Amino acid sequence: MSERGDLAAESAAFDARIEERVAAGLVPDLRRAVKCDYFYKSFWRDPHFLRLHLGTKVAGFLAMLANHAGPRQRILDVGCGPGVISLELARAGHHVVGIDVSTSAVRVARETLASNPFREGFGSLEYRVLPFMEAKGSYDVVLFSGAIHHFRDPKAVVLKATTLLPPRGLLLCGEPCHEEWRLEDAAQVALIRILLSMTGFWYEPLGDELYGNPERLLGYMREVYTEYVEEHDKDEPAQSPNDNACLGKEILAALLDRFDEVERQPSCSFIYRLLGGMRGPDEVIHALADFLNAYDRLGTRQGFLRPSGFYFLGRKKPVG
Image (cartoon, one colour):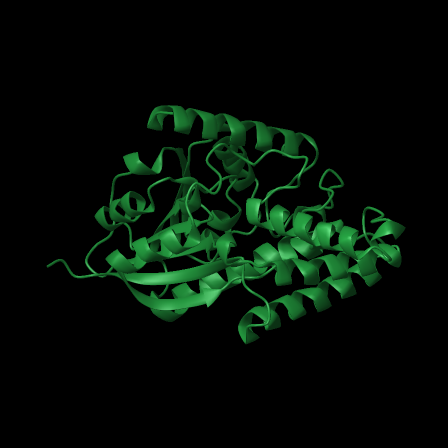
């Protein structure tokens, strides 16, 4: 498929995705999100889950910017989608341009921005329908939050980012590295889901056959492994034609070739595909979510869980 065909297919996939979600009640705003039963296993199902996962990611980005860049940065948010992260960056006082190939996502982002009631300390924010490789201008920071892995050539993407940055400008990203995940990680997720199911706190019954059948249990662990590595359930398509077009290790190699590493952190291991699957009274499942989120974060820091992604902040290398 040609590059133009790739963009058209990506745009169409994300147009359909956001239109369906908004029609089902999605409010793409960390501060104004509502419960949305359309999501059967996503953290978007409950604002508490959303804050645990995406809110933690945003807080990490803002902390990196505060520690290494300072206030009121000019930021290009690549693949901004419906603008959730862009909006929080602007609320923190930064001057943000969010770009995406999805016309529908940009329309939703603009509508959400227009109704934003949190204006104190607001920087500036605008959204554009624009492929990244056609972007122009100069920014202090280029941000990719789950965007680079939709490109087949991460080297070309990172090189393009350098053309938008001044000397020693910053690239900030959060990208998946699913190839680092292992069956041992999936086994922990399977155990947690089965225990939740046995006690009535999981969205689907996992079946008595798992409990006394080692081969069936191992098969379920392998299903969980495939689900996480491919980023979708076995009966669902990928979120877009170019999802996982390159590996995390390829992305990191491209970053380190053009940027001096300032900070790198592991992301979570499994929580993002577990939170929304819990069912029960809010006080119970929110407490369970808090514990499992803390367990996940501790596990990736201590090394007994492999992260499913990484956060990177790098400074543009001097030319020559």
